[in-house]
Length: 190
View 1 (cartoon, rainbow, N blue to C red):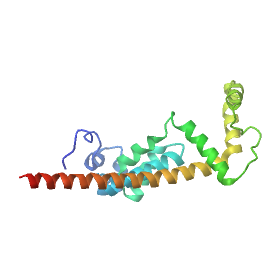
View 2 (view 1 turned 90 degrees about the vertical axis):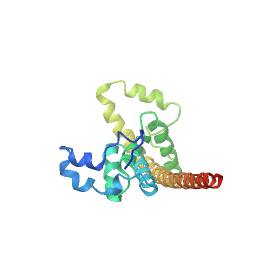
View 3 (view 1 turned 60 degrees about the vertical axis):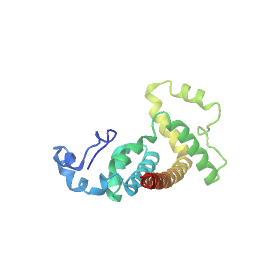
């Protein structure tokens, strides 16, 4: 298979099978769907990666790879798509997820300490000033906003996974039509 400059650093099935650290998992990593860059694999890999990247806040690349193995979609795309959530996108994403979850669950009452109003920054700075209490304060805050946040994250994860899948299919379709049209014009010109 001819590989372009962009994809030359992505590991192949053969290099994974020869890696001594991944040897125990080579049985699971050998399926050809995991390494093909076709419409189905790339769209599914993007969907799995976006869902895992948004819904699971830790070990996202690992869970993205596991999801790609189970669903048999492109593993490198699934692993790379988990980076949609990063230190720059997580704060606005979690804020939007909390607001969406609060809207969907319908809990207008905001418990003490869970307010996301303008004073939350000062409150966080003041309470997190002592390093020894930051983890307890974080856990307490997550427990107060947990249901709303999780509901919002799951809805955003599902919507973004479906949107990513549809977007890849649409772009792939239009690119194929463009190539066919260009090939037909070249043939007609001869």
